[in-house]
Length: 573
Image (cartoon, rainbow, N blue to C red; front, top):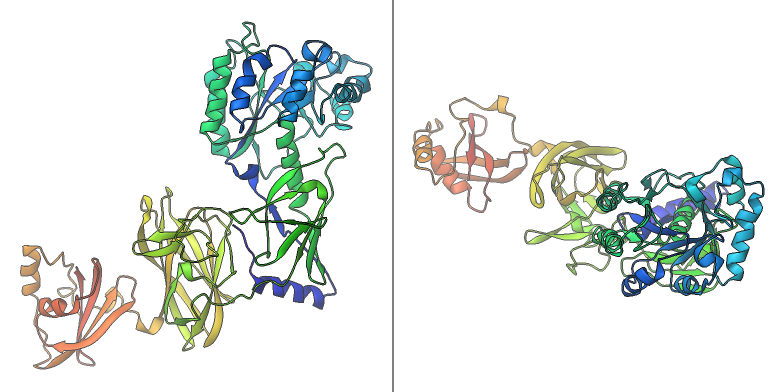
């Protein structure tokens, strides 16, 4: 769920107008691998001994779609292609495996092998043909150039490779893992599925006959086991051409610029290849569409349940119309000094790339809100996500920032808290899970009085933020060097311990005479929690009066008569 706030959009439009410009880049971002952690394409060459063994499995697993590379030299390509045509009409793919199945680097007439055989497959009923697989994986520049005239991608077989979402591959040389008896085993192929998920990448599997006992054959049970493992890893299991088209489209559309219109904006892009399929459904995030209408060629596109849109890439344009909603504080401006609750970001003032949330129902524009104790926090975050909050600073001055966060990552992460040009990085401590929150102190920022916007930026994936505390620096407790005496700055264990009771009971009585003294309690980040006057007594007496209402933890207790004798003790409840 990724939304760019109207505050940002308005500034972009104003800047464009001021500079006599009408375009800005990047309003559309494609969801990687159609929303999966990775992708795999299962390809089957030569068109023989496949459908009888695979049809039942494929028909009962609608989320598994494959590619059949057909040659004119053998199998269905030289006879009846109708079975494969029926499969292609149900979401599978027919690809081009050349007319003669010869080493392409030795063939004189490459056009007949590529374009000529593509046209023959179309004439035999193939719905579309837009990918190629070189026989024997033999290729050179001339072969690649001939293939690229009428195909968007070519599959070779240099072993398992993993193609990352952000790096554009060599389209005429997509490698695959070729299954062979005694070579690339079933176990290796299954492991490749896990690697694709872990690397968030696309990998390709090459098979030939199914249920055939020869060098390149695979048993029916083994190919089903590999496909089942791909499902277990929750990969996008799609035909070679479908993934290639989606992958190529994202490099084009993610760079597309938006142009302002009288009632919104338009985004237009170009196709990356003349042989792209007729339809390329693309799942995307679109900036600044909350409360507005998205359409293509006059057809209104409704958002998916997660806030993404499934658009038609081959429409080559998209329109967003209507006025954007107003950005406003969710529960009014937040008074500072005070605490900024993470879940109370301003309406429509965030970017949150992931779809997940805990379905708390706390608010309708739910950008990853999770439960945190008896309250809420923002979670399911990715690096680059941000949330904005309207502050009402009562007094200009320096303020100390701390953040209460959690992460199950193996190492600490950081967030950035910024107000205008003032910013500070604060750690989020790794405590082993996303439910153990801890407060971490950051630096200071200087704020002017009045209303202004705070931005919380997530710097690492998977960080939860419960709240941001902004306390006046003038209220921060003294450092350890300002403690009056080492004997009074002792560590005090929980009051339930008998040894502690004795320790505190023996503490020095205040030398300030009878009457009242001032008592102040700070947390270990220097934030003042309470301040009051109380009767003179031992540090145990004073702590017993002070600790009511405080949670378990370590605190600094400062007490005495202001201007005469002040002492500090580290205590624990």
